[in-house]
Length: 183
Image (cartoon, rainbow, N blue to C red):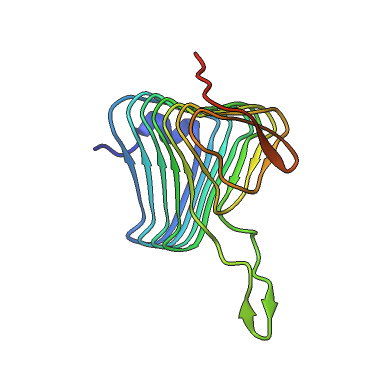
């Protein structure tokens, strides 16, 4: 595993603060006009071989959090990938395609309390292999999307989706099953 090259660093805005935070890169990577922010302790951004990222924002804020982007995945313009709080993981499988302005958020961003207890804790997000997320989709905390699925334009996922499904709407609902798709 390699770190980002000097050229990749100057083409992108990268800010890392805290202890033992790292960016791991397996093999070749095309990344441009992307902002990466990592704050806290023991956090990892792991980008696997063949990934293409353009004009996106990736943030990890907390302790022990991780974002993994699988082999040959594409992250389009304006995407926002966020893993926050403690020991939270956002996983994007191999050969996934996130179109423009997709937002994947493991946290609501700010805590909400009831009787001094946080009632909106962060939860993991997991995209299986070969998931296509169309333009302007929002995927919220706790959602898993099974392999070979498609999420339609402008959808908001609040619940998990099984493999080979098409989900659309706000909130998104499965409208087709047993599908496949080609890039």
